[in-house]
Image (cartoon, rainbow, N blue to C red; front, side, top):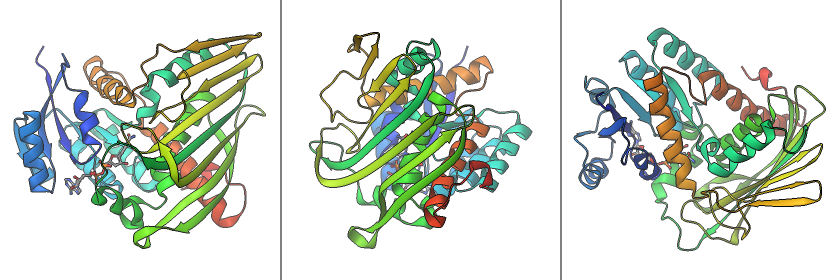
Length: 356
Ligand SMILES: NC(=O)c1ccc[n+]([C@@H]2O[C@H](COP(=O)([O-])OP(=O)(O)OC[C@H]3O[C@@H](n4cnc5c(N)ncnc54)[C@H](O)[C@@H]3O)[C@@H](O)[C@H]2O)c1
């Protein structure tokens, strides 16, 4: 069977990790790239050995050789680009957050239904091996009935980490392009997605979010604490985000890290790192019946989550099956993020379905 031909729209900083999903992929090739930055698109084409280069995404969508696209642009472009791509007959993987609001999410879901093509929201933490293993253990009852979860996030300074260009940061602090909320929306989308993925749908949310001026006139929504109750039981979760330039985050990627604790009726699971290598501990640890089990041999390179997530998208197209996050799942995560932001603004509990 011929390989699927994929085009990337937006080849900025994170596209480096998307590209890895096509290296030695037996089912797909990276066929085209598109970016409004002509120098960048030329460099990517050369370095990655890609066939086609575009600076206008509509021209890429008109290319009949392209079977599927990945939308990897600033957030305000996710909905229009996804809808146009579906209408052009392409399968679409769109980076998180799915879009800016529920109306856009509904329009994307409707466009996918009309087109009969696959649309998925790319959220890489769900494809990160320590989280995949934690999910498998939870689902098998390894720590009994899940009772609560706690997510801790820290943004700090990189050591020899990735260089993040100013342009990659700047649009994230412009609410018109990013939808507002570097920590709770742009980045938080990952963690709220994991909160649902591991323990189920959420009934109500409460949050305190500090809007703090930082450099360049930007406003950072951190420190923040978000708490929530799950829908199906007296089960609770929390997310705490703290930012400090004085914390050195050993990383190969963004200078931030996350660790997650899930409590069950018979034990605990700890995911000790995701994006970076801040804690010198095994990536996954389980406690049950007086025994601590360390899962030290899991692949804990964050880039692997991109490779897994990309391959899953391609496999889903070939096999004609859905793939997480589906449109509806992506919309639920968006409502969760927005519920936290609304709760902080109005100092009250918010149910995600209030977000319309
Ligand atoms: N963990 C993750 O999965 C993760 C991490 C980082 C970023 N992201 C997501 O990836 C996306 C891109 O983030 P980034 O950090 O690479 O940002 P970036 O600014 O480095 O890259 C965005 C690229 O889009 C290009 N672009 C802008 N408008 C365009 C248009 N009209 N047509 C074509 N290209 C256009 C820009 O020139 C730029 O090269 C965002 O949606 C972000 O949320 C996800």
